[in-house]
Length: 133
Ligand code: FES
Image 1 (tube, protein in one colour):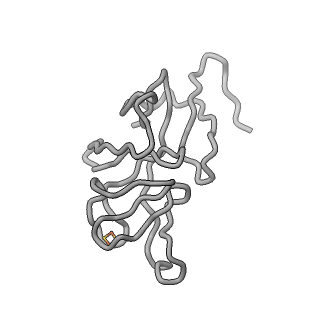
Image 2 (tube, rainbow, N blue to C red):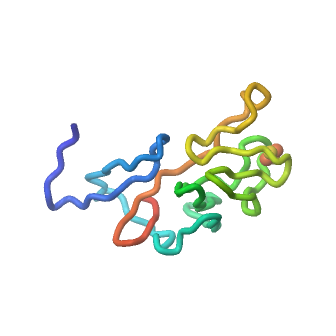
């Protein structure tokens, strides 16, 4: 188990594949880059960000908040206009659905060779959700 002193900021990390929260300590070596107030997250929320030159989408659906690359892992199509519902994101190009919980495509063997969504770890601090850079 990781040790940390009480003066260390403790934040909640939203990146776990099982959707549970993980305590992240000792992140003082990195800077918190806020993206959104947690109060603004709602079912179907989607907003595009560019951080360190990477095109990302902050999305919320099915009580899951994820920061993903704004590129479909199937053929690279932007996901900015993708549909979000019930913890799924559907790419507008070929309509493949990806699960926000584990990032994997739905469809069994037909989609086995499609990589999962590229995801970034999220951190909550002082009512804001963001990333460490
Ligand atoms: S590019 Fe997204 S499903 Fe094909």
